[in-house]
Image (cartoon, rainbow, N blue to C red; front, side, top):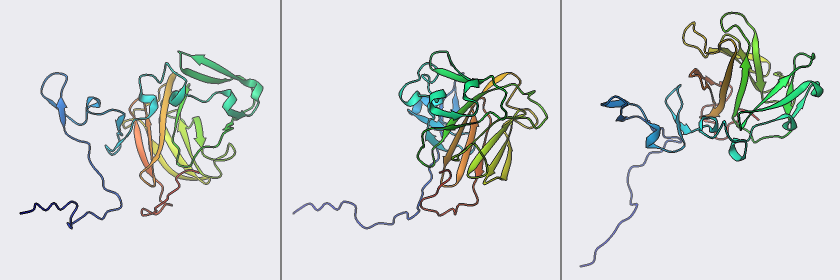
Length: 235
């Protein structure tokens, strides 16, 4: 009698365009017992984003080598990578190994810059800045960034980070959302503090904005159809 093997035979199959999986469970806690969630020790290069607990590739600025290396995947933009207004008023300040900061000492305001290179669409960025704001109240804009061929929010998506921890989301010169990176009335951004924000386009039409201080939000671009096969969040 022969043995017949049937591989990948007819069976019910899921037909969803996208299947979500939850990264949830339990792992040994620091003080004994079990802790809910996902431990970094259970995976390599994994990040559980804080807005919806989705599992993503870990942004490079969360790696241990981010502050000590400025090569390869840890390369950061400097003066040579930007076309700046009043170029003579800018300084490139290397700091702490792989970290570098741009300082503007001129008098042309607003001070603006555009990357000299173009990047692929739906490319996320890490943006860091030193906030001199009071941290509470007021409408002072710490920094604004966006995707456009010029330093303007008139076309494409852009984000305005306020001194009190709020973030305004704009697209094509129209305000699309207002969020708070703090908890309640407590801002994440404090006076005289370095802030680092991850701006990540993902899940077809969503933006995740998260800071290394712990604040985060998700913004949905309603202009994009949920079933769009080839969406463009940013050009």
